[in-house]
Image (cartoon, rainbow, N blue to C red; front, side, top):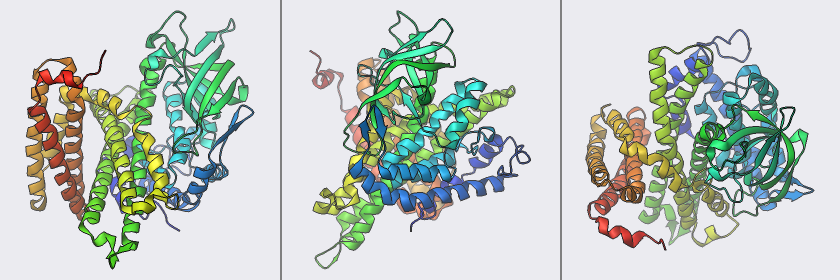
Length: 568
């Protein structure tokens, strides 16, 4: 039986990044809880050992029963009856295994029953779960909604709900409505405050992942007469109190084990979370940043299983007297698949470390005042996290879809049949570039970091780190690509035409993302020679992609913009 952590040494490589020591020491408050909890680490080595042991448990469960259940869960799917959603039999078994193993509420503080994990090893667990069953990762991964409860809820709400999540109760975030998809300012689910100060919710939510969960975070309109985001607040709904029914679950292309629900709220009792009017402006934005990182991890998990399925098939399938992996066309496809996988993974964990740093400082600030240096460092990492989360989600999900596509291509006609896992992987992959903000919306979030120079500054930092002789040719190539990127940015921004910038945004963001991922792979190759071939393949891929975008921008005339519009 496979262990999905120990069979992938690249995970351990990323877990042992030098920045992890600072992350762990800050997260553990210099290991001050060692005497309060018998499972709290006494030092950095002890903490890292804890993370590895838990990840080995995750890997064992995922490589065993969860992966074994994936096909049956896909066939059975979730169902709806009597106003409730019902999981597939395998999903029930998976949840029970994770509860018994203590894998719920992993990032929550120990005083609430959590493991107090930093985000990085938690996201690593999410990748592993996604590799086993992409749809199940949606249910398991929604435990990170507890982070919003922890950040913005009262101490009473934290003590009331977070221990339940750590014990295994499930969560959902109820944002989308029939007339409010990505445009959450249009949310109209009504929150009414009664004379006794309590709240009730009325209306409909749609496309809610795990919508029949135990604890819901709900975006609702609390301010009478408002029509924009300033009238929205965040609420906590407890399924035990009743008032919400499942009208239907969606019949989806993929991730069939994850029930996507349409919910009807009828005088459903709820609690205000945080302050009124901050629901969208502050709380959902924080929630969505975590969701982006979660989908990025999910995407890497899908890329991993797609690559492994393709590699295994290419080794076993024989044509014209030899294994098809010996054919250059197939070998090249596999090399590119691996490069895209490792590029998206290295970006994922760079992003998670940045998120860790600023989130931990935010948490410390709830306990004491930060020093000027600490506050400056928090702002620095917050800006970097804000810049990289849309890249990790947007580019990672696109690579995930491309790898799933190529997995089927390598399988040939067999890949189109349900006899092989790649058909399910392909269907599961498709949603990653759509939900929690489409790739196009990730570009909208990222473009300001092109125009303000955040990406350029980060690229400069990577370029200045120096590389051994064996990697210098690739580093030189990336310097040349950076110059091409700068030239493209200058041409677009100097035109001072918003529509032109919007049109070119995707190309500029992709160029920045490709160069950043290539530099990150070079850094990996500096400390681990096993990454050299992957870095070589990815740098060649990036060279072609940056040249393509650069040429398009260089040869584009503003007068041609009209040809790309479809307005009446």
